[in-house]
Image (cartoon, rainbow, N blue to C red):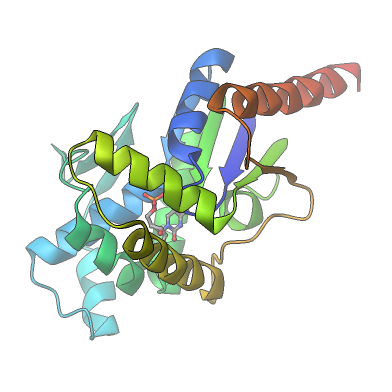
Length: 221
Ligand code: C5P
């Protein structure tokens, strides 16, 4: 069974999807990590981000793998190195290209074959796993998401002004929504959860409830 969880940056998808997978006894796939790993590879190789053909050509020489909970770039575990601002800022140059999306979508489908999996990203329910049994779109207002990120960064000792976080987040939202392929949007058959005012535990319970309902109706049919 495949459970897709899509939604904008800062909606708490990653940690919630990971915990949901553990509670369900499913595996977890963080698809953003694959886009990040490909971007890290391009940065390391000093690819010219203005040159789409160069990016596409370069991407063919790179091996990306998802290994349980880690992302491997040509066999190297880069799960920590992909979480830096230069990577985040450059992702759009790759994520906007259909050739890159097709390649990474194939890796995602290949990883999920024959497995029970919770997959998390932007286009999971709409493009990659259109036949997924259970689709969730997890969102929250821009202000709420920025506030959560602000608190997270402060706890990590890297405080940033709230307005700055909101501005960067709005820009990322727009890039994610306007992408010609793989744009951020809920699938028609997704359950939309707006987590404003909800605790993490409440969101988790809601997701688990949706999954269990699907499992029960599947076993009745
Ligand atoms: O989920 P995360 O924030 O790590 O994703 C980083 C970026 O990768 C997103 O802002 C988006 O541009 C891109 N992405 C994507 N499709 C996915 C997952 C991530 O385009 N399925």
